[in-house]
Amino acid sequence: MPAIVMAKDIDWMRERYEELVSNGLNWDPPILESANAPRVTIDGKESIMLSANNYLNLSTHPKVVEASIEATRRYGAGSGSVRAIAGTMDIHLEAEQVAADFKGVEAALIYSAGYTANVGLIPTLVKGKDDLIISDELNHGSIIDGVRLTKAQRAVYPHNDVEALERILRENKGVDRKLIITDGVFSMDGDIAPLDEITAVAEEYDAMVFVDDCHGEGVLGDGRGIVAHFGLQGRVDFEVGSYSKAMGVQGGILAGTAQTREHALNHSRSWLLSGSQPPGVAAAQKAAVEVIMDEPEHVERLWDNTDYFRRELDSLGFDTGVSTTPIIPVMCGESTTAKSLSAAMRDAGVIVGAIVFPMVARDKARVRTQMSAGLTRNDLDEVLRAFETAGRSIGLI
View 1: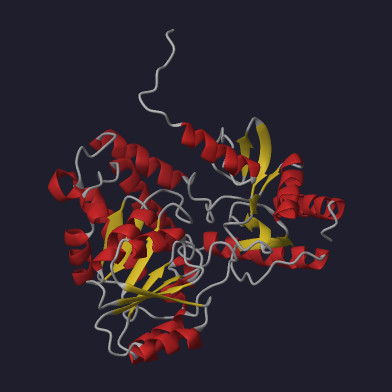
View 2 (view 1 turned 45 degrees about the vertical axis):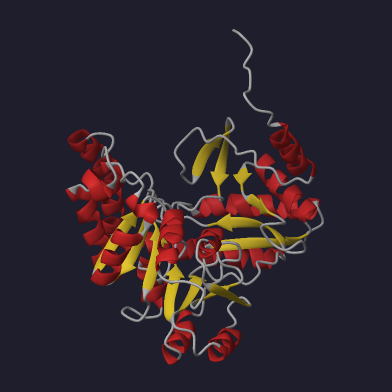
C-alpha cells in the first residue's frame, strides 16, 4: 500500500495533542462492547457502569427498543432530508406531541441534540448589542457556545446566586431584551438551580428565562423535569432538554408555547440545516417518554438508589459535595487524586469518571458517579466496597 501523502503541513495538530498529553488533558475514550446498561463490557472487561447518563435504564427497555425496530422497518433507516424541506415525518410530530403533553405545555420541537438546541435557539432570542444575556457561571459549554454566537451584551452571576442576578437586572433596567440562562441540574456537582427564585426575579424585571434541563428530565418533578419540580409551567419561557440522558435515546427537545415552537422552527439554523432524526430514533423518543409516564417505578427506583448510595458514601467518610440529585461526586481536591481513585475503581471493575481541571477548578477535582434505576442493591454494595478499598489505599478516607 503506497504511503499516504498529506496535502498540508499539519504538525501543529500533533504538537497541540502532545501538549494535552503532557498535561494529562487528552481524551482517550474507552470502548464499550455491550449495551450501556448497569453492567457492561468495556475494553474487554465486565464492569459496573456508574459513568452514564442513562438514569432510568431506558436505553434497553423492551418498549423503546421495539418501537425503534418497528419504525425502522416501516420508514427506513433515515428520513432523507432536513425537516424544513422534506424530512418531517408523522412520527416526528407524534414524538413532539407526546413530549409536549409530558411537559404540560402547548408544543415541543425536536432537535438533533441538546447541544444543537442551545447553539441554535439562543442566538435567535436576542437582537444585538442593545440586549443582555445573564448566565450562571457554571452553565454547560453548549450554553456558552450559544451565547458566543450572539452579539448581545453578557453578564455572568456567581453560581446560583439570585441576589447577584437581581443586582445585574437592577443595573440594566433599561436594556430592551433581557435573557436569563441557567442549567436545571448542574452536571458536575449534581445540584439544582433555584428556578423558582430566578423566575420570580425575572418576572419583576421583565426578563425571559431559559433553562437547560438535560439532567433534570426523567429525574425531577416525577420525571417531568425542574419546571414541574417547582410548579412553574407557563412561567418559564424556554425549556430545553435532551433525550440522550434519562430517556436513553438521542436528541434535543424544546418545550414551550406554540409560538415558541414556530419561532424556533423558522429561525434556528441548527434545526433548519440538520438532517432530521432517523425514524427509529423518533419512535424511540416517543416510547421512552410514554414509559416514564406509564411506569413511574423507574423514577422511584432511581431515587431509592440515589438516597442509599449517597448516604453510604457519606458514612464511609467521602465528601459528596453539594449534590442533591443522582449525580453524586466524590470530591478529591487534586487532579492526581481524582485520577488515582478513578483508576483504582476501574481496576476493581467499576467505571467512574475523573473530572479534573479545566473542567472544574484546580482544587475541585472529583470522581463523578451517576445513579441508574437499573442498579441493584447488590451492585451498589459492590461499588461501595470498591470505593472504601480504593479510598483508603490512596489516603482519601
